[in-house]
Image 1 (tube, helix red, strand yellow):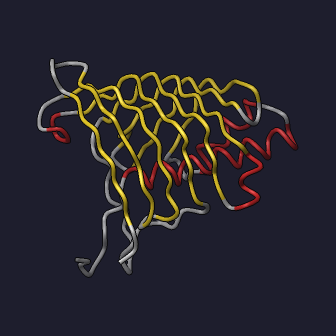
Image 2 (cartoon, rainbow, N blue to C red):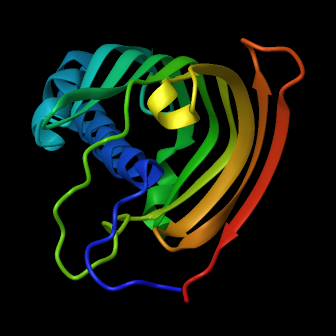
Image 3 (cartoon, rainbow, N blue to C red):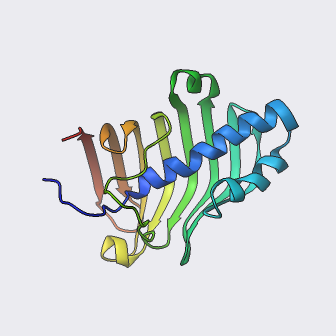
Length: 193
């Protein structure tokens, strides 16, 4: 059941919304300015100070490598991603889809939950395009006690298709790295009410 009033935005929707300017910036930079430095320098202003990129390299624009991606809110950094590799198809944007064949990260540290964005009228931000991720892998996801009940380290892999903040599906496998015997499989689907 849906409640009235402001709704907190899911962290995944925020990450997807922040990665889209990076993808579009990569295309523009390659086409017009030809430089990884320009992209890294523009991410902070494009995201309104909420994202920062360090060590951008790879084969532009289809195989991007980022040494560190940091996401912030008014209280500071809430997510740090190290050694991120995005193998994607920029031409799919022409059909309204951000298609990622492979997304790998060596380490993702979720330091805390992000602050909720002040929105009126309920609902999260609309994604500018649908998102399809054929395969993602996080070698080490670190979660603090405030999120997981006690500190946890996991290895994740899976796939996802997100049409909007309210519709999509994902398949996720997780394995505990810091405790014996923890293995999880999650299949989720969301449809508009």
